[in-house]
Image (cartoon, one colour):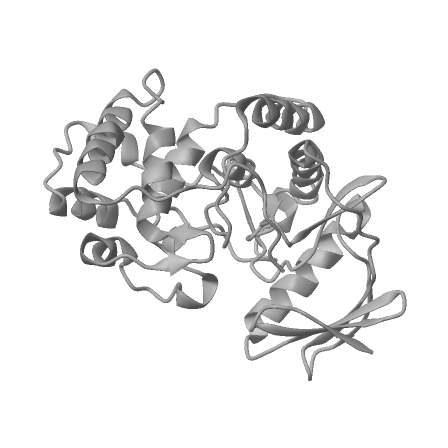
Length: 297
């Protein structure tokens, strides 16, 4: 078998037309992935499970073909997400963890620490569970997607959960918030991708609230292994850190810029994001954001 490059959370080998993956240390992640793969098998969006050894946390899967992605890869990506998200419904409640509702308090403390006026934004940060039962990938990042003649496919579902698929569709607006690479999708391509998603699902919905939820999440400033309950928004007030393609402050500034444009749907939050962005631009050095996708294994 050929050992493939993978994250520190797993060992992955290629064996002909099969992939062998061993999840290291995290039994819950292994269970989530196997559950998600089986729930999504009928969609064709994930590799088929061929064999499972729970004792060693090892799964044997079909090896998906992979072609180089095109400039408009985001359209196939969004269409594939829509199909994955539709794999589950209310009847699957409890089979996977529930998507958490963001706590806005650390973000509000962060704004106050930067001496930025909150205004009426708190009323727009009263998040609730949207009541959806979509099958979420949990980490739909560049490198966890593959492209075939039939479109996008997804691997590495260790963070799978049930929740609202819009929070993953807006990865294209928010620069892939849980991912090592941050890239800004050109407006024309992003709109085409969102239209493909909504066409697949048969309805269009506003996306601004899902974007705001990513802005306030401090865990979206660090890689998965560091999402341990630390208040990373409190950290970023006094220190910055580099994560692959840009820094934590660079990520925050990009997300604030996106939310600052939501003047019609979230006027108070948009105004807060603008004030924050002005303040961050004065006291922090701007960080570059990629204008196109770069591959990360």
